[in-house]
Amino acid sequence: MKNKPNLKLTIGIPTYNSSKYLESCISSVINLRCLDELIISDDCSEKNELEQIKKIVGSFEKKINKEIKVFTNHRNLGAYENKLNLISNSKNSNIYVLDSDNIAGSNLDRIIDENTNDFLNDRLLIQPNTMYQFWNYRRMAKISSKFDSRYIVQFFKRNTSLDIEKIQRYLLLDSGGYDIKNYSSDNRFIKKERAEQLDEMINKWIFWVLNCGNFVASKERFLQTSDQGLKIDRKLRSVDAIVFAYYWLSEGNEIKILKDFYHHHRKRNDSVSFVESDNSKIAIEHFINEVLLLN
Image 1: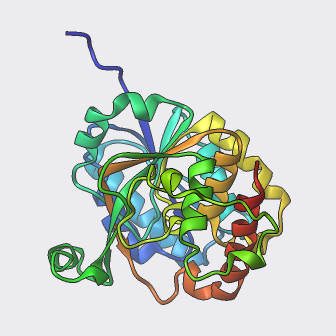
Image 2: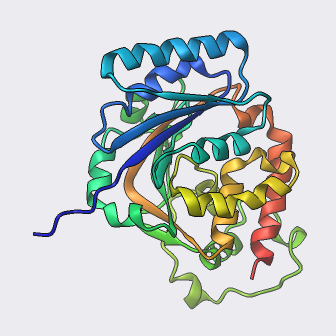
Image 3: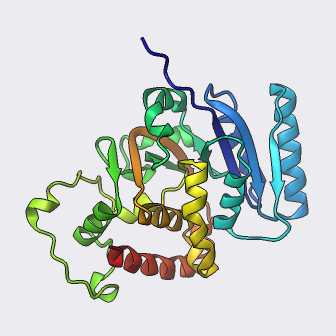
């Protein structure tokens, strides 16, 4: 039997005034077999927040006898640029970006063991298929998700690969309530037989997938493609996950959705999606148009 290729994974956690969630986030990944490095990039949090982050990190370092690196921005750069800084500081070729208010799935080691070749493919951005949504009690939310769809976001019934053409077709088949005619003069027609070739989505539209975030990426290729996003207005980068996905796909790469890959997604009234809701709507409209016009 051939030995499986070894994946040395960096787990990167971006923070911004989110120290109260950090301990549970780190706890969800600190004992993973796949973990080779843990780093944090803080986007110029308040002084007391940064002190709390360092206190939490110090507590973990005493328990595991391993350094957790903390990088700090001297000014607030926004989620998009902060995540690029995070990835730039990774020592490994592959990094799992996990938002500080979220919690990794308990099966991540198994997911990597079963899909190592996909994770090592530098043209694949690996994303979860399921998010269990919770406010305070993630375990209760996961149990409740079996009976109440408010607690779960799930995309596909099987492992699914997405390229830019598939994204365009999904978007034309389901615009998520946006009027496609307002965003593109392209009157392409999707034939029924082509539509049926698409994997069935579960109650969500394709921009939910693009906005998922919490992905595993190849460091060098991801930085190369995402550098383009620094040239657009910061307001358009308010939907950072969509921007990352767009530039990744625009360069001929693919997104791979793994059916059993999941994380716990914390709902917050002070999250970026709430705070920058006006900018987010404008940004989504912008990228709907960009996706449809991309050849």
